[in-house]
Amino acid sequence: MAQRCEICGKGTMSGHNVSHAHNLSKRVWNPNLQRVRALSGGVVRTLFACTRCLRSGRVAKAVRGRRSLPAA
Image (cartoon, rainbow, N blue to C red):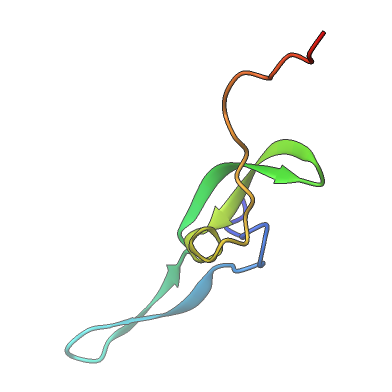
């Protein structure tokens, strides 16, 4: 799975672990992605969104529950 938010496009960042002796080794920071059931174009689907998008309200979460029957 590609570590990328499907809402904002935030992805992995690379850099170095730096020891006290200033030895450098490569490392990767991954975004905090959560699998969410969301409304996308009027259709409920699961997508991976970062917690920043979830917290700021950019994701319209789908409601779980029974569908209401039309009145007869």
